[in-house]
Image 1 (cartoon, one colour):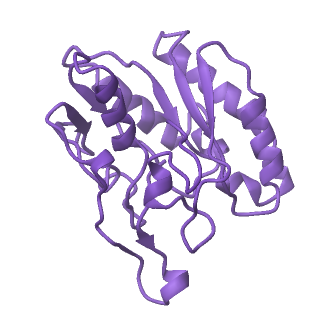
Image 2 (image 1 turned 30 degrees about the horizontal axis):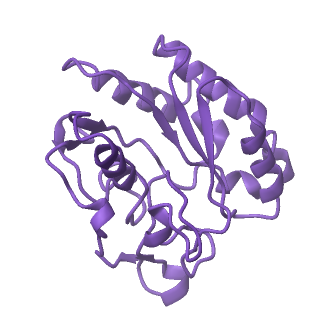
Length: 223
């Protein structure tokens, strides 16, 4: 969920990918929303949330800021929200298995976020487009369930709330298999938001800025 909202892809223009810089009100900064930077310090959160995390790609608007602002809108007494961006676009679920570089980095950042007395309230997870390319990569459900359970175990939080997004699109022809795996996972305290039908960028893969807020042209879908 690194966010590609507002990013004009190089495959469309023939030039380097660029972000249009448009930040909707739902994603505006707030003094009550912080982010853990790449060097493990708390700073004011703003779009692009993953600018220093997903460094090999051009990042834009994602669902993280909209989610945090929605939480504060529903409960003004919630306090300060600390977002811990960890996403790296274009990665497969096997790259997030326990013991991998990405998993170790995820755990390092998660544990660092606790050092100043914070608590981890939920995991927001949006991944899987790259797992739609080849059929051998679609043993997705088992790998995803194992990832969720390992993450909870290593944080000693067996009932940690997990909010995952079912894919709106895919990089290959096996999107149905991955979506069925995502929608079929049955773990306690896990909720799945279906992004199918949300608007896509011209690349046909990434959600638009509007869709990143959980809003399609015809429906309101809350993250």
